[in-house]
Length: 264
Image (tube, rainbow, N blue to C red; front, side, top):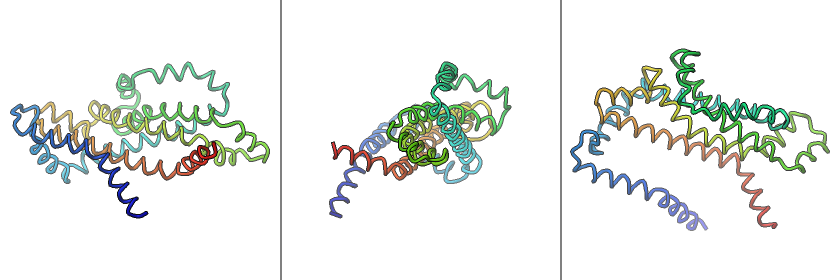
């Protein structure tokens, strides 16, 4: 049984890695003979990556971006869950606010950066709030859907046993809506880095977004590419951590679904 599990894990790893390996090899050999200064060899980009990010610019450029990204993402997600549970629990309030919510979420977030700068100025407060705004709506809408989709039998259970509001929240509402909440957080996790980089390009003098734009404007193309690669690696790492947390938190949900499918 142990050998079967090891073989299954190896197959999963190979299934996930074959395309990245193929892309890296194609990039390495394809760029080696390419003479354009705008598309330098991958070997030169990796040299610049080592010089910039192992570890000279980590405190000045990388860590500020990570702080803004995480703070904005968690703030937006937290507010989205709280407001989503409230609106999902009182459907008539949600119906009355839905046109306003649809209007606000339909505005492309990149067009709002100037408004955020005018209201909050330059710096971390503006960037964190800007990221939180972008992360808020996917979590909000999915939380509302999760709460509205709670089975009537679960609500009847809470009423029958006369659970308090806090018990209903933590024993019924949140567990039942958590799969949908994680869907919204996953969407926000993809949007937040985009907003972070765009905000840093126009409103800060540090961070990955500023570094990439400054390198582009000063024709340091190799440095620009090294920043883009680091941004991709950051997104990959955060996504892997999120999947691990989601897998652990929602383990009960997969077990429940499996039992339901077996029973049917």
